[in-house]
Length: 104
Image 1: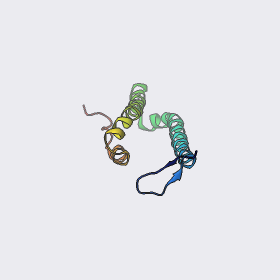
Image 2: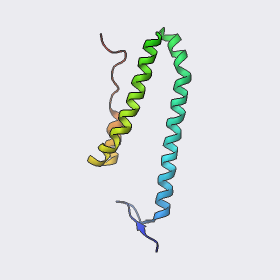
Image 3: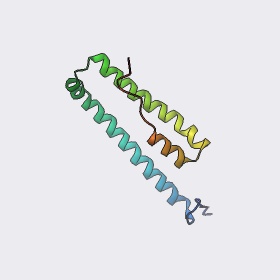
Image 4: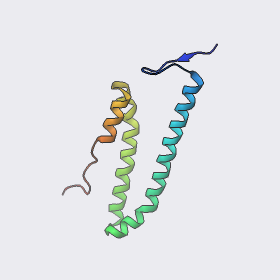
């Protein structure tokens, strides 16, 4: 038996086609995040040298980056269930980052 899933506002597609599309989108996102995290580690020494940061300042930036990834991953699922996924994704993309360096 071939089940048919429908998505609001689109024509019906077979279940394997929908799952394949979801898998490709998930793999694309995962690979982009993996590359950006790898590149960040390579750029941090040059940023530290250019901006004359101490190890503590560079570590604070790395910690803030990691906490941002963690909070985003933890709360996007909750936000997507509470509000529509496109709305929660748009909010996440358009929210401003915290000020850096922190005000004294």
